[in-house]
Image (cartoon, rainbow, N blue to C red; front, top):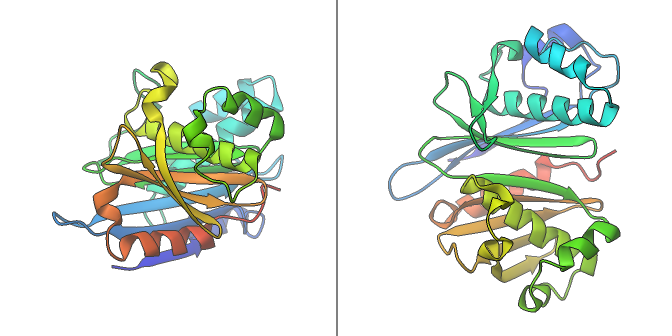
Length: 263
């Protein structure tokens, strides 16, 4: 099975916004092979739309919530999450305003009325989401590389983990470890309401801008991280769906999907 990367794939966007969102939405569809059956993923990465652009991809309740936020930073994170989530589950040509993203008891995102699951992240002016087969488990995280934040991460990082990525700058390595843990916490839908030691990594293999990691307590999962100049993106999936050519196709797709920077 192959993968397909598209930019602005939704015709409804083109008709409503013209060229104003031409580089805002990027999506990729991919089928991962496994002994049981292929599992379909749809990944989206979105940039923050220009201030004042139409918000017709939100329904009225979502617009009310958006305009109810006092601070721009909160409005922006809300918009990025909704836009990324909707584009990760939308069918070709579907109006995004009709897609309802809800939250479960532990704030995990849910797609109302659909047989699809969703995992969402955002940092600064970028948002990302993965819509996936309900038989699958997945978690995504994306974080800015920041020296001050890295020092805080170091306090919950073991010495063994700090030694896993000697080829990377300390702040980048620590940020990567954090994204893998955060993404794994989304897989089991607890977030960091459990001890962070549970998500400890035991091995990392770095090849250029790609790092593959394994977990000490979750050996059945694997983290695929993509390094960019300003941020790190990590997707955690069951290891058995990344066997054979699936891992290579996923990495190639992510390399094309993710922008170089957040601006």
